[in-house]
Length: 428
Image (cartoon, rainbow, N blue to C red):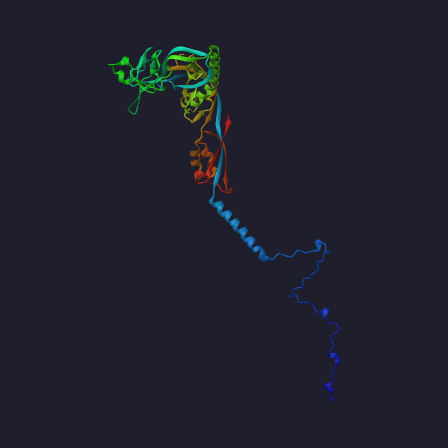
């Protein structure tokens, strides 16, 4: 046997340190994560949450990014501003004398006479009958196209209808002269009450026209005339139901008290917006209207007429401001004219009043008026640093605070409608 064919056993035996446990792991290999079995007895804090996958986060990040981008783009396209301004205000102890004028605005403050009437009635049981003779009556408006000068009509001046019925005034009156506007003659007007010449139902007529018989053959006949403002009513000859005098007196007083309690508010609601009422000038007059019979009932009727002086608001404001303001040309409002005290002598014939003197006293509250649209236009497109200079051109502003959105914008919106003005008042 050849010695070269002998197997050497020790050549194939592993070395002592070649155990698989001692083979070093490559650094590039990923270790296998130990997975522990989770049982019902395993504490919650020992359960490791599974790491979220990155792929699930991507849609959320895209949505957040889109929202942020949209907000940034929106903020560059939308621009608004708010200006909070305090309006200048002042109070003055006022005491002045003025003249009210109905003829000329150059010599005084324009005024008009306002009249408001209300009626109430109550039914009473008749206590008997009596023979009566009553004259019809109603109101007419007299027009003067004859002269620019007032025309006086004496007591008992006649007014005739187209059917020849005669009605008269019971006191002397003066009809204002006509005026001209753009070449057109505007007749002077005066409302008065007239009474039929004779009693009887034939004098109860509807609305109609009137001439003045005393002017026949003169130019005034066609230029001084009248028209009804109410029907002529109350004319009667015959028997009527009557009520007991005591019951009649009690009902009449009740109706008058009810009318008196509401007539002032009724007058105030009828005052035109550009006028103010002088409360102290208000006078009331009662009239017992013809009674109406319905079967055995008698309808007792009462009428109240309240008349007062109303002044041009703008004119009285201008007169007050001219006396108390250093800059009367500014746009200023006297906000409490109605609370000031008017003093004047008693006016007996209010309907024919042409002028009167009066005193005005009290604490006049002056408020400067701000042209908001002009302010918005002046600010639009300008830098916030220019605001103080711009506001100096508006005398009505005492102080102002501004804010712009979005907050990093330094210029006000170019469009005035995107600027909002908030006003508050501040007394000096």
